[in-house]
Image (spheres, rainbow, N blue to C red):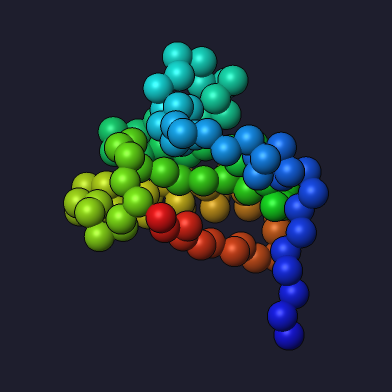
Amino acid sequence: MNKNLWAPWRMDYIRSKKDECFLCEALASNDDKKALILFRGEFSAIIMNKYPYSCGHLMVIPNRHTDDMLSLDANELNEINLLTNKCIRALKEAFSPSGFNIGYNIG
């Protein structure tokens, strides 16, 4: 089965290619609410997806720009996992989902 995931509400994002990294822009913002940042840790952050695929689509991102997971150090990797668990707990409480899809977009 080969199905394409279609999320038409993401067309604004797809058509608005920027030179800047949208995650770095969000982290540089002084307005967490406007930047959709829910939590800032020492090494990573939790951010809402502006163009979500589903209800509760959150992203846990490193605080420094990288497109290489292998470049993350132990502190970054550990905090990313801890914040992922924080997201799961919050989403379970808010939505009582039957499960979770957790993935990595690298590059």
